[in-house]
Length: 287
Ligand SMILES: NC(=O)c1ccc[n+]([C@@H]2O[C@H](COP(=O)([O-])OP(=O)(O)OC[C@H]3O[C@@H](n4cnc5c(N)ncnc54)[C@H](OP(=O)(O)O)[C@@H]3O)[C@@H](O)[C@H]2O)c1
Image 1: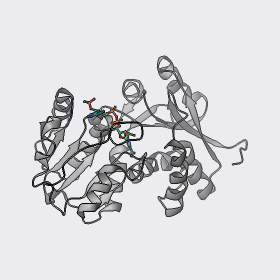
Image 2: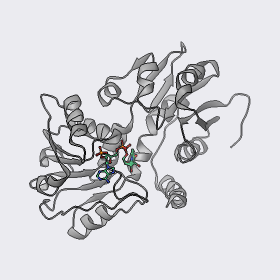
Image 3: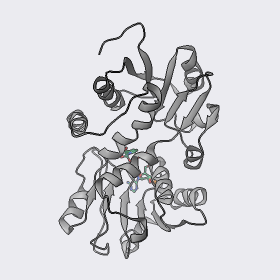
Image 4: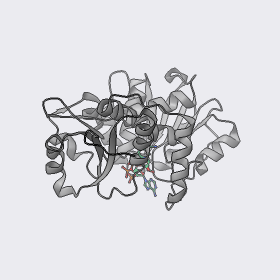
């Protein structure tokens, strides 16, 4: 990467931030597009997030991504919050507008939808209820994406039932009914489902395995795991053995970065085979 006097700047704010793959992702697109830009990690303590965000226009940054623990705090700081980020209750992308104001959005739902489209192009919400495991931050984005894709029924399963109830209260609409279920019901609610998505951290390296009896899940239902370390989780391996179409967590990770890149740097961001290979190679060091 060459830094010049005209280099356009963006980055990612997190605490910690060193684990983030985003600098590699955006660095790949910058090199591919030939844009004179740089995307840097910004280690920002929780107490400093407002000052750090407000400094973006003063420092001529085009914007930034946000990761843990700043995604909720940014909603209260930004000058404008897009309706999807408001529904999800978190923002992961900030764009500095021409007048220096801060626009917050959430691209995780977009990333999930695009990844699903790439992995199972013929999936349709009308195939049956979607079962979502988990009710954390990423579950909110997945549920919003499924509702916007036309899901009429979402069965939300979580260890802490009150957390699932809060997601259902925030994201149910007239067109999308969200029922909530305890972890013990996970196997039973797979009956008749048209999609299964894991958004819990179970199955991630260093976390307990996700143990789930898939026997009631219709064979045509795709199984998605948004965990990406490891990429081939135990859930995906079990689903593949039963013949389900499977989608790993890499596509969501890559696609969620595209809207920010395009807004900051004014160039197209493509999810290519080369990009996947570069990020997979970097994930190896996290296992
Ligand atoms: N592919 C991508 O782009 C992408 C994007 C975001 C996140 N992710 C991955 O998604 C996973 C979740 O992230 P998040 O931000 O949503 O995390 P989070 O907000 O902390 O939520 C964690 C979820 O996992 C559940 N959970 C954790 N330990 C459990 C256990 N022992 N038994 C049952 N449930 C358990 C939690 O249940 P409780 O509510 O009961 O605690 C909660 O539903 C992580 O692996 C993350 O890396 C991937």
